[in-house]
Image 1: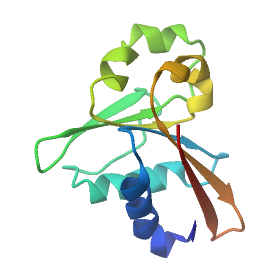
Image 2 (image 1 turned 180 degrees about the vertical axis):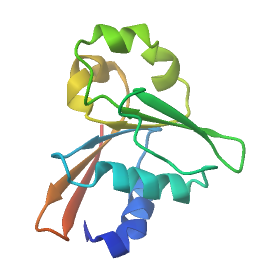
Image 3 (image 1 turned 90 degrees about the horizontal axis):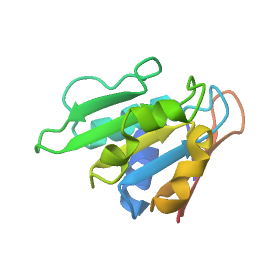
Image 4 (image 1 turned 180 degrees about the horizontal axis):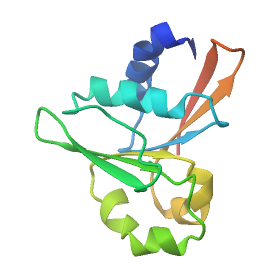
Length: 136
């Protein structure tokens, strides 16, 4: 599907309607809109507060109106996979809670054992993005 900033809520709905697993990984170049899409997904999940990029903390935790938890990861700045081991990634990814992961290519060696949905964002032009989704 394609979307613009004005139709990003439709893209968020599409992801949530088609994701078969609570772990959703987002691929896309810098500026493709990964964080913006994740913010829209958090709105649809009725996260309390405003979602923001966890670039420096690696993970943000959001409570939802219905008492669930959403984890938002940004692995762009990790230097070694040991940082992810040290944060206890297993407790998050195997928790059954929604986990939204930016820059999953940085932790690719950890993903084969985790059932997840893959979202790829491709920049078509300044305003238009293409979203493809694969359940793996």
